[in-house]
Length: 379
Figure 1 (cartoon, helix red, strand yellow):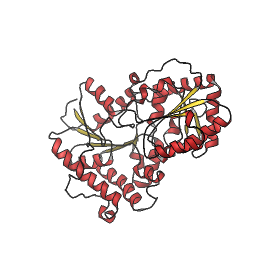
Figure 2: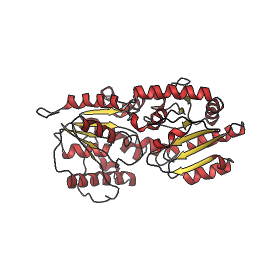
Figure 3: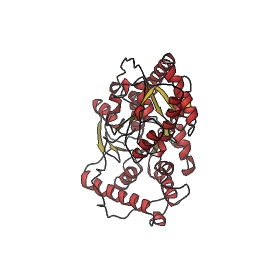
Figure 4: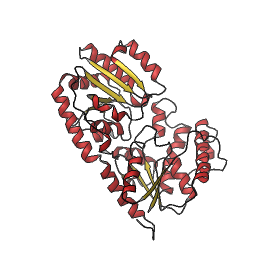
């Protein structure tokens, strides 16, 4: 059976898709399956000219909006690039972005299509202050969920909480299958170490949705309490200058290291002690599972898929979002008590190894693919 994994970004981009799909491809190929990756290069801009139409709503009602116009042009570019580059047929197409899914169904209408919804673009834009709930952009982007439901043969998503988020925008949320992300254990190599000062690390795009302003205020409180630490921030984004200025304002600049973007942070993480990320929303939170597999203690917010990965006080610590004092309290527990920190990290590693293994994902998707296998196709 020949399967196409249709991505939006090239697989070297950061995020849950890039940290999973290429390894899924590798495993399936080893099992004798055919599997290819396809994505839209960043250099392809304003090439597509074909008209776009949707089945469940009229996008022209939104076309005067700049964000919607850019989305539609990107759709056209994906059509143009797909027609230029793909010349063969596939038994199944598995898409990992709404544009990829809708374009593939347009160009391969008779091929079974699976769509995995990994995250919410509109929620990220709202949290980052770029759009408002109920506004033109929000109504357009949430309309896409019902269009995906109409076009895909199967919808999957990465957490039960994210399925609940999608529920108001589709007709049959119960039909959406939850398959959490999985990770190749071989990529993660815990390293025994004994840091004299507790090393905190966070890995994310530097945008408001990730709550790093809350993290810095929690660290300022931690410093005020006399708890020594160093915070390592891996990632880049539009908030970097603002966060650097806030670190100076809070007298934290000597306690924080900003690294910028890093392609494989999992190679770096095992040398640290605690992973912390106070996200304001998260569909799954792939980086928590990755940090757990590096044997780091986890501290996160009780939102989305993070709350499904962490059982508070058992394999990590959960706090409510927007509460820097609660976050400081949680960090103080893991900074001041190395044994407690070690036990949380071990429990987190055990759960991640059991529930977020790549083999589990392979088994689940293999079953899905075989269930959608067209008549006469070989495995």
